[in-house]
Image 1 (cartoon, one colour):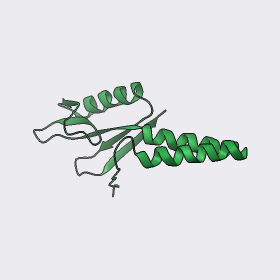
Image 2 (image 1 turned 45 degrees about the vertical axis):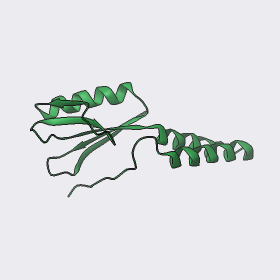
Image 3 (image 1 turned 90 degrees about the horizontal axis):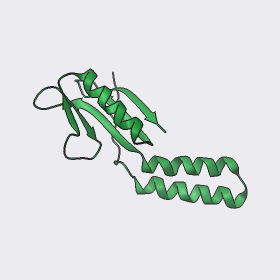
Image 4 (image 1 turned 180 degrees about the horizontal axis):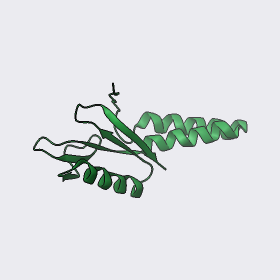
Length: 112
């Protein structure tokens, strides 16, 4: 049984705000761990998520989460995953979610 994921989309303002607050608090208190966690949380808010799903007209599509149109459409899942990996690697920080035909998450990969 796979997992279904729902995210608020890339560039979540709450993640950015919490990250800035934690980083500032860590800096002011001298807590290097809190400062680093704040930077990581802030970057999560800047992360773009690429999704590989089945396309309505057949084949597989690569789409940025929250976008209304597909970035690309491919005949095979392998081609779509390869294209999505290339995009995710070149636009770090990013995340790749690959879905099965039944709509559950097959793999999840984070870059940067």
